[in-house]
Length: 202
Image (tube, rainbow, N blue to C red; front, side, top):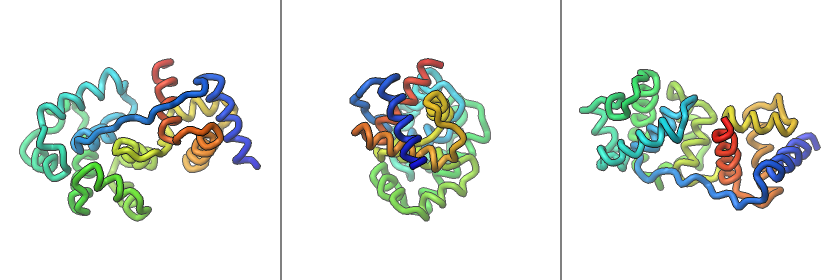
């Protein structure tokens, strides 16, 4: 009953703050270089003004990086920090780590990654890359067309406003997924609506 209660609280707050939808899921990317850089660089940065323009430029500058293999070839000869105009050795290292892992597992395209993430052992493998936590694994899934709840500071803040606090990542993720079901929305669409609402408010 406690889980249902948190879901009902979230659902009521969604209706109050966001209305009845519909809530479209994020479009994500078909360019695997953009997918990998998005998940690697976006944390704690203004997405619309800082990250998205850099990803659009990367797509235009590195069209051959549409596949993981193409992106890996670019990384072997060019500097990602310069290409992204983003000086963060840790985030660059995360992008390199994700790329190497996916290439080693023969994950090359958006469709490949979408299917690969069906398996828990593959999701666990992604977590071995430094800088990749549970939110990153769910977030990268949404970037390739899955419908998941990636719990970040915005979703936690929204939940706290609804009276839902102190939950683990998995518990809050489940509560959001159940709230989406109660409201008749896709989990990824509801997540993105909440994220956008809080990001714009901030």
